Image 1 (cartoon, rainbow, N blue to C red):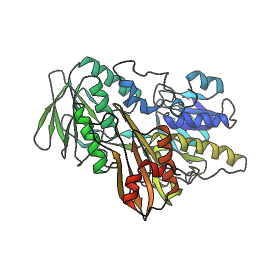
Image 2 (spheres, helix red, strand yellow; image 1 turned 90 degrees about the vertical axis):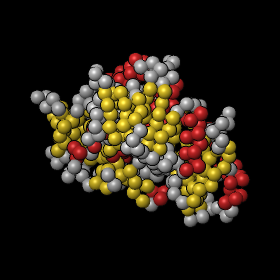
Image 3 (cartoon, helix red, strand yellow; image 1 turned 60 degrees about the horizontal axis):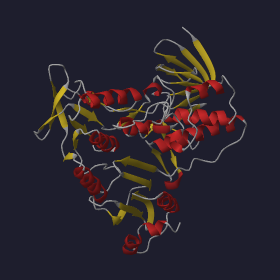
Image 4 (cartoon, rainbow, N blue to C red; image 1 turned 30 degrees about the vertical axis):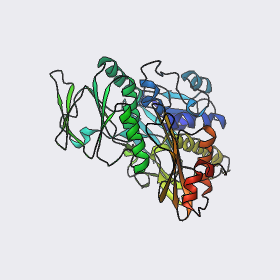
Length: 434
């Protein structure tokens, strides 16, 4: 079979791959030196679009509209861009073996790819109910969302089951965003999750109460404190019912599962140092193996602001870590260095007419401010997290661009707080001082 050789290879074709490629080109990488190997059939794109505009009933987003790097206001890198810059795209190519000692990758088709420097950007894969042997979880019309192909199948099902019933399993990012978009498509939606409130990894009970109330007002039925334990199918093999642990049975034409993801690092097991479920890197995303870097979801890196190591699953970090690695690789070749990665954790979401942003860390005591009535015509509220007498995190729903910038600044500044009651009164005004 064919053997290919490149100076730089990015394995994985998601968000990180597109941003790394753009940075490599910016840094002067020559045509023919860089390749991206992706099991997907399309050039890198902004994945968040899949759970939002891709499924809109009117004027849905479609490729090439959301190729990287439009999500951060950058240039849209069409397949032609890669051709012009001499970056080789090996699409529909799954790597099944990685030999880091030999600097070699092998594809499912038996092709060999040799490299001098490797960037691991394999991202996450969704956790499937079939992984746990859930009865009937292999029925048709049970969907997961990770890639464009997944979104296409879900879109067709939504169109084919007009005014149908959907059960959304999971109360995190995917659960909330897809429940909203299903309602926009006039689908009857029930959300099911085991936790006492939605988005428990980030939201406080008070924040969650607003979103649960708002979703209920939009017609989303929410069932908490239980899980899906099985599915029944009709004679065509399509899902018909969802069985819950508490004994309830829900009718369903469509089931969407969003119960988390796992970093895809199995190819590299035993070859690189791991920590906290990811590949351990330094502040330049270099692993303990010479000339091997890891970025995005798979990287466990030093979070300088809090003096600890973390793995972050979010598009913002996928973009920034990829750019940092590309800069660091080129600088190292020239005997130079770049500044350490100094990341401020950032999460955001948009659904219905809502839009929230969060910066920093969500540990410690909390102070709620603003109007968090789900029935408000323009809800605008937030929360500060306080630890050791300092603001270390800030959340804002319905903020203006300036207000969102303010909460980012306050989360990085870590200002001292003397009076929490005063902080609650000041609300967003407090953040605007920084």
